[in-house]
Amino acid sequence: MADDKLLEETVKFMGTVFFLQSHVPALVIGVVRDGKTAVFGFGKTSERSGKEPDGTTMLRVGSLTKAFTGQVLASLVADGTVRFTDRLQDRIGWNVTIPRRSEHEIKLIDLVTHSSGLPREVERGAGQPNDPSTLTPELYRNALASDPLIFSPSTGALYSNFGFDVLAVALAHAAGKPYDVVLKERVLDAASLKDTVLSLRAGDEVRLLQGHDFDGNRFDNVSTPLIAGGASGIYSTPDDILSWLAWHLDRFASKGAEVRLLDHAAYLQRDGLNPVAGLDESGHMDAMSLGWIVMAPRGDRPLILQKAGGLQGIFSYTAFAPTRGVGMFIAINKFDFEAASGMAEIVNDLIAELAPR
Image (cartoon, rainbow, N blue to C red; front, top):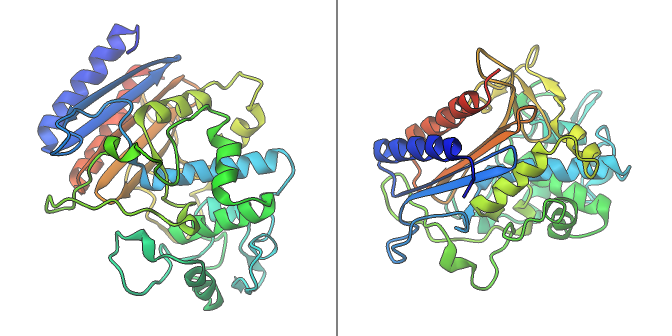
């Protein structure tokens, strides 16, 4: 727990109120401010466990994975392994012709800012929509070969899991290692994250937060194949996410400074993009960073970088104010869009309260 009693009181109170209002089976909320942390859990991780979620609870963070992938890109750019403007065609390492529109070719920066023109999902065959096990490299190769572009690369922004998965393939090929190894070396080890993984290890499942669908039915945990590791594959804990946020907030540290600067910069401004879709669910997107959605300062609220995730009955949201030393993470274990929208609003408002302009 934190030594900051005001921090504890504020976060615990808001977590309690939201848990009672949302009627979800479980909720966990955590905050880091000026290096101090606090985590509070409500409900039960599963019917069998009878245990409240806490900082060590394992859970799927879904599309929060994309911010980790963006940090991998930042690290590889920082040491000169790749450039933001490298063509996907030159980096993916597959025998496939990447689609283009005249002079508009897909670049790495387009993939990480959702401006590649690729659709939200890769088309796949049999399998449940929330079952990632049906994703294969062949599906992605075939989809790219079919020219699935919805608009010319770099001219619009459309949320794309497809784009982040092929970005991870390209980064792994550039680094000459499997993507899970690249992720660990470039991001997880840098922030000393011990419980953030693409595949559960022996013993992890007993700590796993049970997800539920819209009707309250339980989701079975289904592992995500490595090919989908760039968009949504990560499991983590609130403690690890707060440690990761603390790394991001340590902006004057010399170690990792270049990666932080690259990772937090805004590369794609909303103004002039057409279309813009799928990027405003947790707050208005003013610009895109490397996987992070950038919300410009408004009123008392400082500049915020944020990312939401949803997979197999878990909704999560994290946000931080890079110049104010505060970041937050929250997760619920039921697919409930109203509750997901509400928890993002609570976090954004709490950041404004804890670190006003």
